[in-house]
Image (cartoon, rainbow, N blue to C red):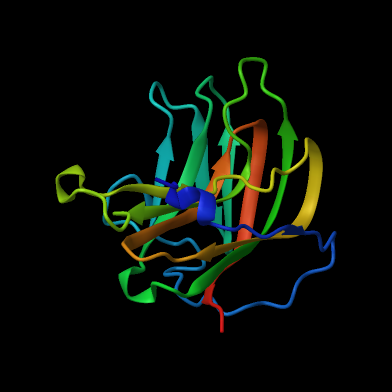
Length: 190
């Protein structure tokens, strides 16, 4: 059986250097200014990290979300969940401006940094008893380079297959250093 994640296409990183991009409407994004940030399920933007002691500071001010690594855990991220069951057959574009200062961690490198998108659902024909699972994990693709990154537009195009129920979009940090995001947008493409 061909995995659903292999059929998901992903679009490129578009660099806009230090020139601000035209501001897109937030589309399906709730709270584009990151005012509702927290660990519980009631927050519009949920903060998560790999298991273990706190290793990431996650904060927001003036419409900019920041993730900063200070501990050993290999990744930290902030995500928002969007229902997509009625969007099967459509393509979404998750985009935002991203900047940061990224260094390769001393320990094993686990995940790239940048925009993340995880598609959840049940693949057509999958046994009901298995429930939902990950249909595609587009975290950190395409990978951002090490070094100082000025404000850069990053985009992910996500085709929504039959059986998809929700999409988690956000920002992930898998390097040492920090990363920021502003002007998040999740659009349904024509």
